[in-house]
Image (cartoon, rainbow, N blue to C red; front, side):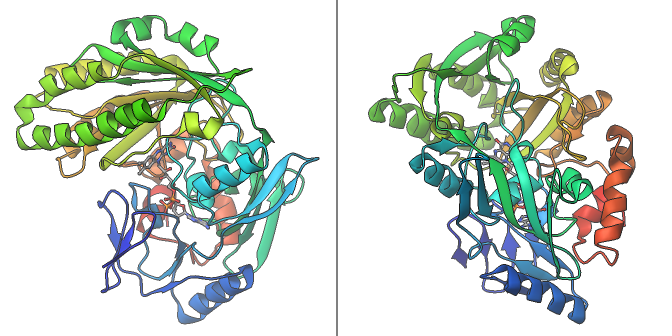
Length: 443
Ligand SMILES: Cc1cc2nc3c(=O)[nH]c(=O)nc-3n(C[C@H](O)[C@H](O)[C@H](O)COP(=O)(O)OP(=O)(O)OC[C@H]3O[C@@H](n4cnc5c(N)ncnc54)[C@H](O)[C@@H]3O)c2cc1C
């Protein structure tokens, strides 16, 4: 078995596996194109052979969005920065570039993305294709920062789009779930490198809910983690700062981010999986383990952190106004159930955006993410949580576990038909189809 740097694996028998290990696929063959021309040729060849095609990123999706039984396109040789435009303040990057390489390269140039998610292992195309987001009062997902896209469509031709150029494709392709074509390059807005001050602080669940509107309004990036079986949360507020830079000292950073948040947390999860009755006690201890801290650093060092403990996740966006009710219902459900949940529930926000199938399309949103340690049965918890999320017209993250189908999406996305009509035009033979897309978009 060979393991890629990203954590996804291919066995010698050709089985592809995602990061969480809950999705496997057996492609007919794998191709690693080194140029847009080679990629176009691979798509044309697949059409001649009557095979489906799917590009993968680093396999960090929990859904089978990237799975294929046809030709699997690997991103490894389509990486790097094509150019930086300091007048337009944009960077154009090859689609397979890992976000961590992009972040480091931009910082070296004195530049940064405005907002990002919790980790930076994913590829630019993989992250944006499923709507990967962090938390923000005014700033949205990574896809919302896109200014242009280049993609290879089903007939092998190269199509570019932006607000001016093929705007109807641009509206949809920023979060295309791999259905419209294979993205080869992405142009993202950048800004001069800035500093963020992070304030992390434990806070009672009831207080966070009572003060949520103020906490959201007073901070550029507010998020919190609630520990099921407890009334405790850890809150995180990130705001722009004039400095000075004051990073987390290496030793306490290692102790809190590696030892407590990954090492001890891993052991706690092993114990909880073996003896579920210990989970509430472990949750009470975990929720108090991290103390308040404040630090100031460049954006990607504040937004992202290592996640070494493997888990399975479901995340829904609900209208922001429905967040407090959603969380009260979730807590009541856990409290009266026999469930034992050792992973915190993560809560974030995003402003409304104009991307056709963005979870925040046309509405101010709050994200609620439930997790289970890998290897622990998760269906009962996720089913009960999903019932609550869908009662609030929730929209699931395209890369995280859910059971919704095209009929549901046509109800919660007013522009769903616009997306499927575009797919009919760009991919009439469903060259980029897989089982996941058949379920969420229809055949
Ligand atoms: C530990 C962990 C932390 C995470 N944190 C966050 C978070 O903070 N916020 C959040 O929103 N999500 C988060 N996620 C989810 C993750 O960001 C998404 O699932 C993302 O899509 C994964 O990117 P990837 O590069 O691994 O792509 P993959 O999972 O490999 O692929 C995702 C989709 O993109 C498509 N795709 C990939 N490349 C191309 C291409 N070139 N052209 C067309 N389609 C393409 C694939 O076909 C597939 O449909 C997290 C996941 C994990 C495991």
